Length: 122
Image: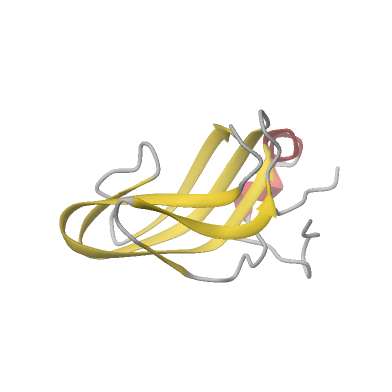
């Protein structure tokens, strides 16, 4: 099975702004399609929530989020400061369709990210 990373620049680092969605890709998703999103998150200067379910993130954490896209918009990441004035960055990004993830789960769980040199981008 071919696995396609839908993040336009998987090795980029994005600084998130509390209370807003930050675009991390220019490639549109398919509405009503299940996806898996992976990212390395770094938080300093406080605590933060990134997306639903990831509160009080330690300094360096690898997150995995399974979700169904409600729109065809490109991937964005949401962040909320919980205490202090945290600086939150995400890097090593990967967004794949759930079906591709399930078919190649063992391989994908070992990767931190991939680009066009290791697997195809869309």
